[in-house]
Length: 133
Image (cartoon, rainbow, N blue to C red; front, side, top):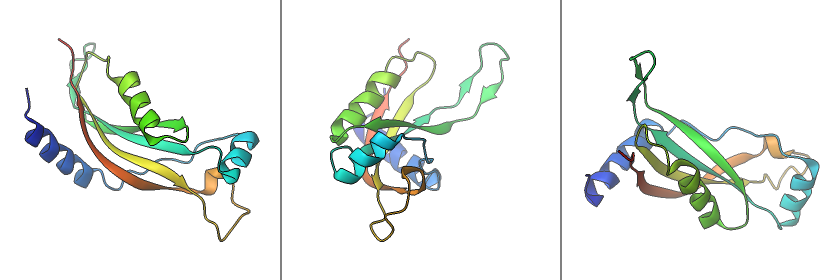
């Protein structure tokens, strides 16, 4: 079992290694766009790193990689909790929750759609979701 310091150091390493991996634009409907622009809806993306693992079928190494989970909410903690809930019950590999991004509108250009807006990082996280043996 890793100590908290080891987890923090490894998460720092992963954030450096995967710093160029940004949340992808997603398809959101018109209602989401209107709510977002009115300020009654926010959209967060949580970056999760999956440890390398041996595939049970092919017995080959599947490299480590990052993915994002998206959450439409006004509370960042709800987005983090959703990521923990969704990926905290996987038995095959360790996962690290690394960062939270918030969709940031470009206020200079109100013609942008949600798909054209960028996510900005708002918080670093050091959360290890260990495999359950």
